[in-house]
Length: 147
Image 1 (cartoon, rainbow, N blue to C red):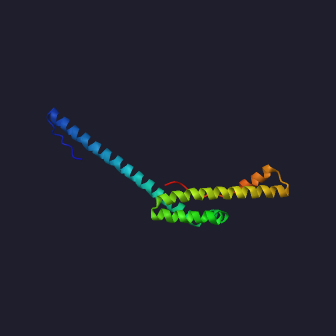
Image 2: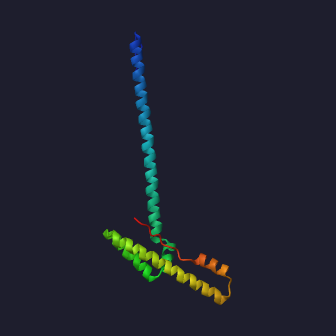
Image 3: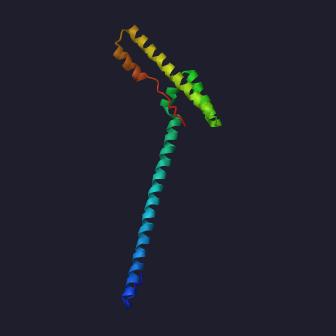
């Protein structure tokens, strides 16, 4: 930066200092804005990377396939219909199918729980042991959220 050393009066010196202060503020503000933009870009890149990773793992995850195998045909059909209604934008039908799907999952869990209890009774296991087995092999609920 070029500095004028021939400043004679106090007004010129004060003006010079004001100009210097303004240029310093502009530099500081632009530096802060650059840092904020860099942070946002970095955060966005990490978000996109996480989103892609999650989508990939959801596509071919073994646990998802296993959970779907354990669900009844009726439940899977409700899920397919719900996805189709949602894609078509029919929110009223989507809501109704979500309710049916939840009900079918609850019924399936109750049937499975009673089957495990019956197995335990035949094998003369304790109820605590049967509950633990059921918890370990329990059907994973597929999340159905309202949108």
